[in-house]
Every structure is written in structure tokens, then in C-alpha cells.
Image 1 (cartoon, rainbow, N blue to C red):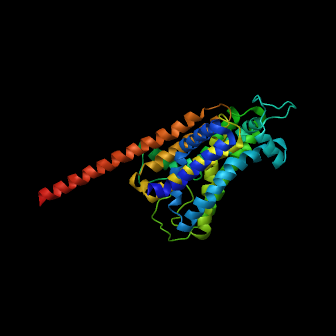
Image 2 (cartoon, rainbow, N blue to C red):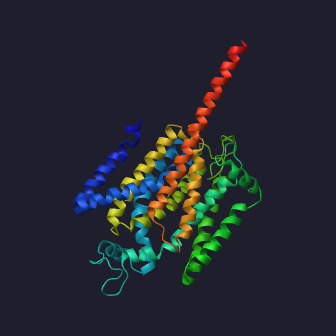
Image 3 (tube, rainbow, N blue to C red):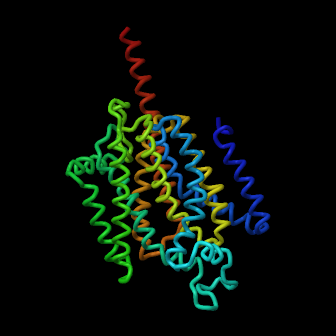
Length: 371
């Protein structure tokens, strides 16, 4: 099963390495591998959340997500998206933006000799609005999960009180709005406050709209007993319009997760080809394969706290993105936070399974003695 699920990822990784070598020799290969590892470490929580939604989609929409979705993830977010930012920020045309990306200044200075900003500088300058949009979208996802009562709780001492507080109507919007105002006021530069506010509100609206459309096209009777998982509600084995909006939700979610990876990549290289090969062809492919693996193996059912750990990692990432509007946070910290939280939730799940197994054996022993 492992080879069948990860086979394409291994094959495309090998192809990406060959292309990188042809493009820029061993230095390019090293950068592509580093970026691939960075993307997987930053996006492991993305794979867990994707799996919670993907398992509720029909087989047709699962295939769409794993085919068309990967094209969008690789070319749309890891290659086209940075170029669009440069296009919008500089006023250059698409061809000029690509030329600017492929021809950085020889001394890696922030500006070309003629005074025009470099590709990397334009991307970095756009970080506050990108972080505000992605941070608020992910924050709404986290709050939607944590403010809902659930059968299982991981960090019960805080999850249960928050679930009770979530009974207050629109609690997620209230908390997210307060945090957005604080981030704009204390993290953004004076000339960026309005931009951060608008981008953050757009992130909130995007989440609410996609989630609302998912509910609108929910078909009654489709596995009503199944718990929601922080995304569009009650769309188990969704087909038709419901499946389409789940697909749309996953693509927006993937885009929000990819923001920090794309921005973080510029700490390593500004070459868009290297970034696309590392983040897209290697990183995004392995994240997709990991998502399928979690669904096929039923891992989220066997380890019930993984979903909780992933959502707490999302909450941490959203706060990191909002803080990064004004303070640079190393990408290693961002990746480690997610890995640690998911790792701890996995260990908690293992301990729970062992305890339940032991209790089951104890119950069997009691029945045997009574007989």
C-alpha cells in the first residue's frame, strides 16, 4: 500500500531532482531537496486536516482533488501565485514579472541598478496582507473546531470550557475580529493597517462563504451521525455541488497553508523555478500522498486525537502568521510547532488505545471469573 500511495511522489521527486540538476547543477538540487523537506514539515497538519475532509467526499471528488487539485497546488500556488503578487505590487505585466523573477540582481541586493525593487523584495513587502488573509482563514477554521462540542476531547481542561463558550452565537467571528484588530494595531506598520484589515476581513469572509455554501448544498441523510471536522459540515461522501464546494474548500485551505511555505522559501532562494520544484513537485506531492495514506489506513479513526492536534497546530500557525505581520518568525519554529503538537496528540492517542485495550481485557477477565 505504501508504494502504491507514495509511488507517484517518489517518481516525481526523482524527476524534480533531475530537472533541478539540469537547471542549476548540484546547488539547485540541494535547494530543491531542502525546500521539499521544508514544505512537508510545515504542511503535515495540512495533510491531517485534508484527510478529515477528504474522507467525507465521494470517490469521484477525491480523484479530482488528487489530480486537478495537485495541478492547482503545484502551478497555481507555488509558481503562479508569487508572480501574481509581483504583477500586482509592481504594476509589471505577466511576462515582465516572470523576467524579473528569473533575473535577480547579481549581488542579491534589494534593488536593481535602475532603482526598481527585486522580485524577492516585492514578495516580502506583500507579506503583511498575505499573512493577514491566510492567518484569518486558518484562525476561523481553528475556532470553528474548538468552539464546537465533541465526543472526544484531547486537552479537556481547555477544550470543554471553550466548547461551552462556543454556544454563544457567532463566537468564532467575535474572537477572530478582536484578534484581527489587535494584529493590525500592534503588528502592522502605520501605512499597512488598512491593508491588513481588509485582507484579514477577506480571509474571514472567504471561510464563511465556502463553509456556508457547503452547508447550503448539504444533502439531508448523508451520514448525519458523523461529526464535523472544522470544515463544511455534514458532507459525508458528498457528491455533486456538495462535493464541488468541499473541493473548493480544500483548495482554499491548501492555499492558506502554502502562504508561509512560499514566503519562507525566499529565505532560501528567490528563484521561482527552484521554489516550484521544491515546494510543489516534491513537497505538495508528498503532502497529497500523506493525505491519501491517512484516509486509506483509517488513521484518524484509530488515533482520535490526531485531528485535535492538527487543529491546535492550525491555531498556532494562524497566530504565528498574524504576529509575523510585524515580527519575523523563523520557519523552523513554525514547522516545529506543528510537528510537536501533532506528535503529542499521536502519543495521547496511542496511550488511549492501550488503556482501552487493557480495560477490555480486564472486562473479559471479570466475565470469565463470574462464569
